[in-house]
Image 1 (tube, rainbow, N blue to C red):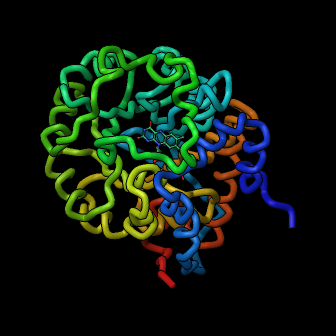
Image 2: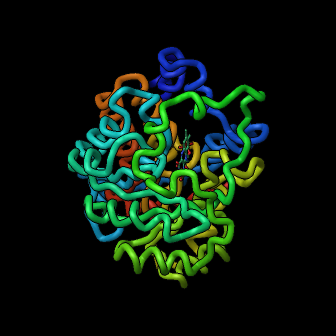
Image 3: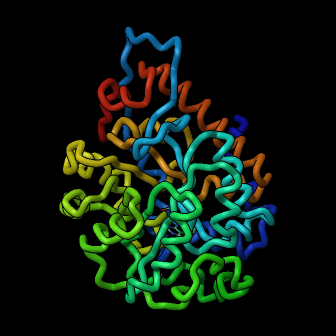
Length: 343
Ligand SMILES: Cc1cc2nc3c(=O)[nH]c(=O)nc-3n(C[C@H](O)[C@H](O)[C@H](O)COP(=O)(O)O)c2cc1C
């Protein structure tokens, strides 16, 4: 059997990337347990397709944070896109713009906000808050000025976990500083906040005037606190298995978080999604959108902007096929017409 282009992507990327860059993208923290389990966790769900649905026109269009997009898909924030391809975040953003899907720009990026905005993409800024919060203000103001549509507060990183790198020096220390630090200003070397709380969600919303998404939620109680603090969305993530190793899979936590927020805010998910049925499973478990981390990195490495465009197009085609057979004409119907059963 020939593997699909999407399924073959990581292998292709491993051939074109310098080994240390490939390793940085692939690795998890600790023993890489959570990173290795992520994709398999989706595959443990079984879908219950519905017959007698009119699926002549399957339309992936959806809205996130009040803005229309072409599909319930987005680019998760990842560092070092410049190491995947010389056009880095600009190529990623251009492809997301062509696909009419949002891109979350990592705060550790090489491209400026204006360069990303110039692609026309609907972009959100991922932020880590420094212990001294005011140091983040210049970056937040610049993002707002450049048309950023939301702030994604990554809340699972009081400290960056040691990676499963066999003790080899990380590629992070070998790349030009500007590939990671372009937009950070004085916050570049500031220690990360270790006392993040609901007040930070409210503060971010107030200082930016933008919707705030909290990324790294795995618990029902945390999700409820985010809603009470004014979050517009919670993002179920274990950071691609790169923070607490042996943290639970996102697939297994999604439905509980969806239930906990009971429609008070949007819910996104990431982690190990590699194909259209995986996206459908996320929607069936109640996610409003599914975000992709490594998949677009591999696509960027293999073929730059056109690679990421193809990733969106192939994933969209797979999703349409899966939805049509499952009896879902629109993403919102996935939740009601496809029960997901755990085996
Ligand atoms: C190489 C790499 C760099 C990442 N950098 C960031 C980052 O800067 N900020 C952040 O919030 N998450 C970061 N993440 C986590 C992703 O946003 C996302 O949660 C994760 O990659 C999703 O899992 P997936 O790669 O299996 O799709 C990174 C992930 C990878 C693989």
